[in-house]
Length: 371
Image 1 (cartoon, one colour):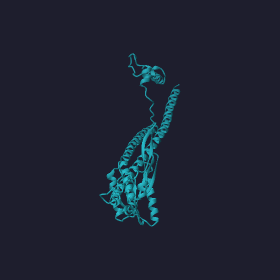
Image 2: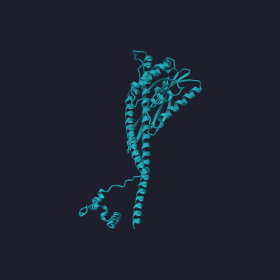
Image 3: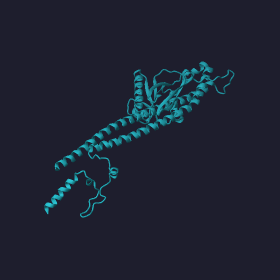
Image 4: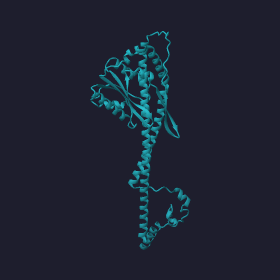
């Protein structure tokens, strides 16, 4: 009886490694029961078969990392599209301010030509001996935009060191959280005032900044105000720039042209079209025209409006540069995620193939051991 049980056990073990249909049965019949419909049809077996699952830790870690990289790519692509939409909104805001700027420039040019040398005595047009300079630095409120903020901060530091080496006192008016946090940690930085820089600057934000700059200059607390901002060039390039904001130059106001940019999409790729705008023609005032107010008072009231417009335009251009830098940064991150996903997929496939090969070798070795 024992011999019969041992023989039956050996026979069952041998059948387990055979390639016949009995090796793929789904139910084991009881003793004395006929085995009917136990063999699964080939088509049904193929349909129910799942992919080989690699159970070793290395392959599972690679698979989890591929999933994480693909999710990151989705996020970066979404951030790129959001930045592109905001760039379009920024360009619309710039175009909306053009009529006011052109009219202001035209009226100012006509008044300056009418007044002649009398306009040079205005406080905002008077050049002083420079003993102290206020640097107005425009940075962003957020990161993930490449080197946009760091370039502007380095430019401000270099300008501060240059003026200090000449014996000129320097203080800061900071616009944007990134610049504020950086210079607040520097003991040598004398900060006069700070302002946030949102993603959609408006006239109210520009007015608060321009009023602070005007009060500082007219009260004699500073002799010149320089504006440091990022000039928008294209979607892949922007230039940190420095310009003297106050005192004004009458020739710059009346003879300096303007340019606008427009974001377009060609063949699925974003691009920028720049348009140079001519200088607004000075408005002609007849010699017999009588002004209700003195022309000097009119110019004095126009200059703060011009300053407000320049600050607003600078904020809009800086925001456009930040968004363009974020678009480029997110595109680079998406490309890097794609390359990394391909590399990890190759590693995963190699690990999976190695595991399947190892399993086959173990099965063959076990079958050979029973022979």
